[in-house]
Image (cartoon, helix red, strand yellow):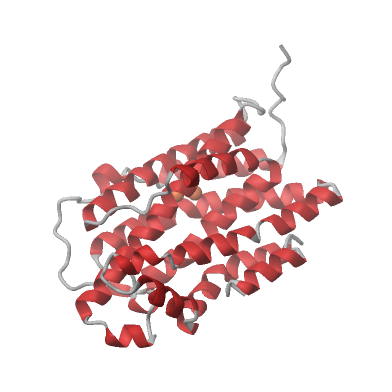
Length: 301
Ligand SMILES: [Fe+2]
Ligand SMILES: [Fe+2]
């Protein structure tokens, strides 16, 4: 048996140690830190209305308040359902990568901490979906297989870029939700607050990993990494406007989907969600031409 790689990794270790301290100081246990028995607030939105995919469309104008709130409930459940399967994928990838690094390195310690955070987030999201009283949006057999396959593809630098595509876009959307203020369901605000706090450290860790590794990539790997993340654009765009969202509240799903996908207000929310990540990818030289075209085609740029 060969010995695992030694622990010295200079600044990466120090960075991991700093994040570990932050985790020790401020982490949550959603199962006890959220009052799951508190009643939902009547008539309050689950997402700020301007973030709902149909906001401002002709169809929106025809919907009554109850239907609008219901659509925000479904879209909230959709976001956090996607959050669960993304975090599942990330955790699988992290565990696999760990077999190739030292179990005594601060980087591994931090990755294990992140893994634990994500496990609690998946539980929190699952409980939140249950609490708001809708079915999760869950992949079928083929979709589930695809998620598990992606978990195997995310390795090395692609793991960190994949992590950012999953985390940063949701993070920016969640900050928009929090900015939505006091008119939102208190449960939604609580869940988002906890998630944003813990994800901030994950994002820093992924960004730091990319900054350190990007200079050492071969031109081919660099090209692949810089373009593959563009696949995220179509995945998000299609899932954020899946017809089941609208079918479930009694709208014509196809027509609603068509209006949402053409909705400039919805596009503005996507652009705001992608802006921080786009700036970072540009900064580190990982926004390839194909990826840029994909993000533009699907209204994130
Ligand atoms: Fe998370
Ligand atoms: Fe995360």
